[in-house]
Image (cartoon, rainbow, N blue to C red; front, side, top):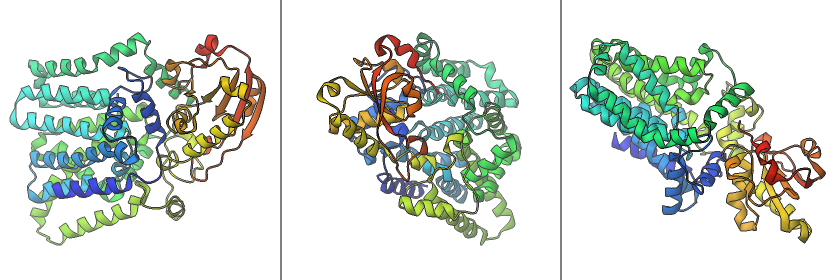
Length: 497
């Protein structure tokens, strides 16, 4: 188990410095410079972790992505411990670690410094605590569950989906007796106490996250899929070879050991249904699969003991490792961008999309969103430096979304650029600064929109990164004399989507 976790950790560490900074990573760096108890689109933990990494290890990619890699290795260990707690012996424990380490989307999630890197670990610690409670009957462990769940909520609000699903699972099984005792309720209060400062922040700002989700739903930007398609995409994201294992795990949770762990089986089913109904992205359920793979390892170990076919063990391991080798270029940057683009073109299937705007990209979004930011900043600097001194003195830089603004604010210091502003997400709360709109260098937008807003609009230069996001290949504009005072009109620039 420790060996597998170490190999996964090293594999993540040796590749995480390739390519560039991911869009969301740049945004979280910006958030870490504005530490608060909440943000429009996320709880505060990720910004605090980025702040910690920046102050301890610096701003390099290797330093920024160290904790996500550690979280992935820790998930492998927790999965093995969970399998052992469910009854696995030596091979089952080891096999659970291997299967979890080889979750295809897991490599991608633990490659970038995002909330997604920590969510599977927090879900599975909660699942492990539940199994310990079921096995040992120690209801006081609900206090630890509440603490971990509270941290999970501070990391990502979708932790509430797993919590809700588990409550339903408990109510549908004999484990409902836990609600007759005080410890599970106290555990809930512990979780509430941890997330309370963030909830108060949301209340004080009139629930911006709810407004954001409403806007996303209304825009229909996410790719709509039916339950069968969603299930099929789960098989692809986890890895087709692992499907029989996690399916066996789901069946084991329902029927193994007299259904002792059925609450966790129901938790997966309910979480699946909730995410499908809410039209969530296909990777939202990814944190649940280490739990199913751990249970599947127990079931497979028991099966192998019955059939007594020694060759099955090395055969299964070989097939899993072969699949991992084939899928690895799609999850971490082991190929050059050109090599990856060619590899994708040769695939027999089309990779699933999560947003409509990602159609037509050369690379998958988790890679494409790492390209173009330095070039964009360099182009903006050239435009800024070419302005007449009087205009340069009052020029501001405006990004249509948080990616552009965050790239300028991270890379722009070396060029002497002024801080960028945006109405997108939490940037809206950070305001326009001293910018009046007399001269705006605009990124990520089309000229037609700004010609209605400015007295004059110049297309200063074009952007075209062959591997970046197509939506960022828009010209750098210079808006002269915005037809409104940006200070007074700032509330109109709110853009939460």
